[in-house]
Image (cartoon, rainbow, N blue to C red; front, side):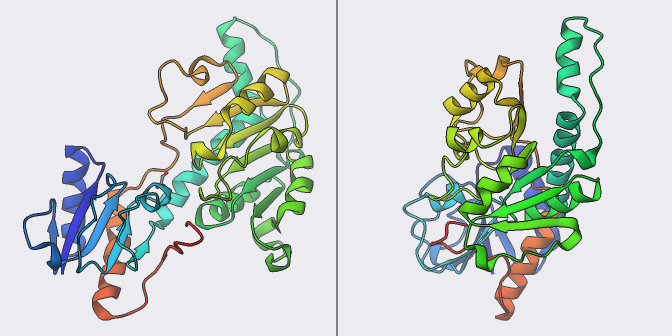
Length: 317
Ligand code: GLV
């Protein structure tokens, strides 16, 4: 089959992906640009946030395989061919990287390490009271591949973890696999927020979750809670977070994702003493492991077998 690699990749990334994908799928032809074969002969597009319009006019397309876990930008392209299967990236190596970032942020918030970094700037020697992990409830928003892996990792570390997802409460398994309490639905969220010391967002970005982390949600948290956004910038209402930081409602925020990326140089987050900014680096797709994930789906397509990690376009993820 002809496979087209399309996306927002620099030359080095493109070369690495080309190497890894060709190694993983020697029986298929990987194209780095349109025009090498007739458009109609391209069966699969392997995409990393391609510019809108990149996949328009490919009548033979059978699968769009994303190299990104989140497909919100892809789905926002009005020219995306209708009726073609879309698969998102689900790579255990990526979920493990996300769990490392979430664990670092949780430990630093729980033990006050961000505060000690601020104290160092002022040459302040001031030890704070020390709490045990089991005294610091963590709420993970989202219980998909990423959220589930993060929740289990934190539970193993001794934190009381609740994982929340949208949907009906009836559909939620109220059991506690791997020590994680599962909740679903809006009413359950209000309760879970009231007792969470740290909230970690790993929801998919959909019309229902855009702007979910607003003043209303933030005021439900106990005073001084920590916020960690590892999902998408548009989940968060920036003005509401800045107000919550100013009032002390939020003690510290760790933000990996932003409405505009790269974060503009004059954005107040950059210099805010109680915001830690990461450059959308919490969990990056690693071509070395992800190429095998892509290959597995393409071999399934070639064999007429079921595809994995398909996106439900109506749901938005
Ligand atoms: C990263 O944000 C991704 O969606 O893969």
